[in-house]
Image (tube, rainbow over all chains, first blue to last red; front, side, top):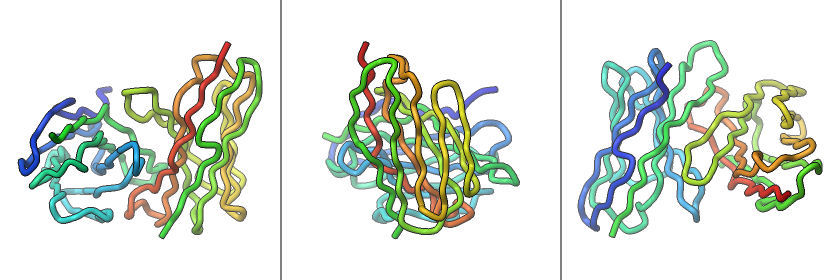
Length: 114
Length: 113
C-alpha cells in the first residue's frame, strides 16, 4: 500500500515568490492535514481538509492557503514568501472515520527561502 | 490554548539502560500520539492512546496515558542504539481532531554503546 507522497521534496525560492506543494494521501484516506516544522517553533498545525472542505486552520497568516481535490489530493500554497517560511512542510493523511484517527505522514517538502 | 510539554528535551543514555520520557498537556484530551523522527526523515507513528489508562507496547517501547493527570509516558527498556531518534508526543485537544494535533517540542534521544 503506497504511503503519503509529497512533491517536490526540496525546493529553493527567493523572498516574494510563491510556492505550491502537493500531497497525495494514502488510498482511501479522505483527510489531509498540513504541518510546518522548524527548529525554533517545532511542529505546528497549518490546516486540515476533509472531503474538499477546510475543517480548521492553525495560527498562520493568510499567505498560507490550501485546497483539496475530489480525489483527496491536496495542495498548499504560500504566497509572498518570507525568510521565516523556510521549513519542512509535512502532509499527513487519515481515514477519520470510526478508527483511531491515526495520522500517516509523508516525507515532507523542504522549502528554503533565500 | 493547548500546551504540550515534553521532558527531557535531550537525553543521552547508554545501551541497556531504562528511561522514561514524559509528556504533559494542559487541557482535557483522551487522544494522545507518539511519533518517532529520524534525522531528515518524516514522522513515524509509534502509538495511539485513546483512553485513560491505555498502555501499549512495541518491542522495547511502552507508552501509557493518564488523562486525569494529563500525562503520558514513553518508557524505554534496555535501550539499543537503533532507538536513537527524536520522539514527539502530540495531543488532539478537540476530541475530533478538527483543530489538528498539538505537538511537544520533541525529545532528542541518543543511545551510546
